[in-house]
Length: 212
Picture 1 (cartoon, rainbow, N blue to C red):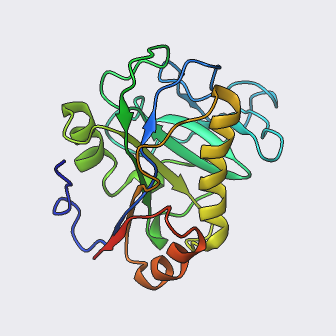
Picture 2: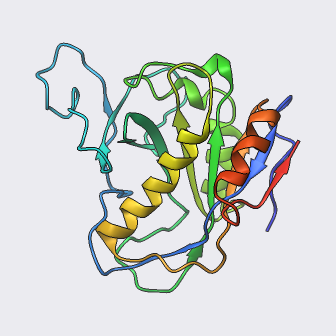
């Protein structure tokens, strides 16, 4: 598997996460057919363009604020315990197929300059969203999921890891167990080497390694 590490200059990369297999035992809220809605503060609360947050411990569909010059419609919008994130599905992914395909998960943590309110989960995609991530996924060079979470203050702490593990667990509860070929995952970080080294031991065995 080719890992693209030269396309984002001045980055700290942490490649981690779980290798997942498709299941059809239930219906997940994470769906490649989901529409991507743009935030409208004037819309009625609870509508698709101004949604309410889901119950604690539950993934909910979410919104974006358009920031990028390229189309981000391939990046579906969700939120979990106050942390919004974008999800890009693997090339050819079919949520109803029972084909046993395994998909790695790459998680990209943005730098301090891309923080934003929970209604704006697109600043986090400023570095890498289109290239290399979307380009590589669409070409099949990266054959897996990509999650880009966004924080509101530019800092990542162990609660971020807890929430991301919670996203995987919530998906398992909704769609059935996700058998793992390997209890590892791929994360990609910018600049936060010290933080990365602090967070990796929070879930030993869940993360693969750090690439600077």
